[in-house]
Length: 434
Image 1 (cartoon, rainbow, N blue to C red):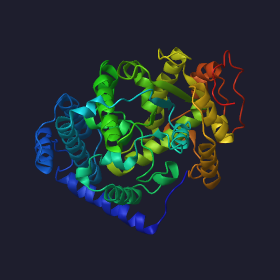
Image 2 (image 1 turned 135 degrees about the vertical axis):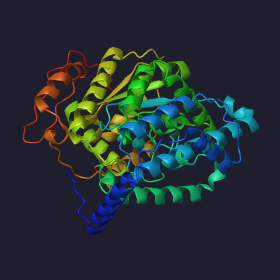
Image 3 (image 1 turned 90 degrees about the vertical axis):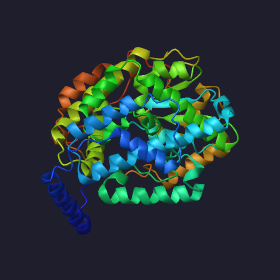
């Protein structure tokens, strides 16, 4: 486990905890958020009033109620929630205004988008970044999911602003960049897009909000408004580009919305990335810890692992249920983490061939150059312990064994234990990587 011992960071952390204690003693951190007031603030800030579809209001209220009641928000957490909500609302207003002023945006074609999904920390981000080295491909970038509208400034101004914000977050969460290297021009997950309508697991990663998460899981139609907005967002970005390119999108959350993706994008192409789930859980639990810590006064580390295990056991069950056929025109393309990290160029070429595409020599060279420059993708070295986040290796291996058998996923080395090969798969066909 990476632990930052920078004395300046330590002093700042103590100062923030002291401010939390003082604010909490006056009851300032448990006051309810006023959704109507936040909406008025966004309208005043943008000078716009028309949201178009207002179905986001119910999810917004649920999120805010859960944040106050369950997440023990810190001073930073409360400020971040306020800023985030106003930003999302402002973006909704500016996008609606653009669609009203230019109805043709809604006619932008989003043809055969590629959705990369699978367990978190399985290599989905790495594959996404490699595929976006091909100039024929397009993905949403960090800066434009935060500030999609030119009303927020020039491209360069928005990129600079987001990089400053990321540096500030790096000060609050000094271990984050080693776990998930990111800058303003990095590809971004689709959960940040869906968060605009307050229907996204992105919030669950940042805050302990079980009531919101349970509602999101139980609402069988919750993903439809999110993905309808997702398409509008892509159309808006594509309109600014002035030309259509192949959209390549990425998010583990897509596993829970394949039926809705099929309804919104009937010609979508799906990639599943597979990795040892036990290794995934260790890394994902640690990332959740690092992301949540600045925003809360209380963090139950022992509860993180079991919650992640339950979530992604469901995810593996969904992958097994779909297998190679998720109901789209093209069969699912399967990529294994071990293939991706040992031969990334061939693996990306395999994805292209699976969908009848051709990886150009220039793009293959760019991928090779990227990997040579960042052989580990920019990630730092980490060690994890099962007990840090309430996990038991034997129990987790038993729970995820059917998934590993189904897709021939090899077990990776874990702390204090030799790597064991996964049982021979019952069926391993259609795997893109060689």
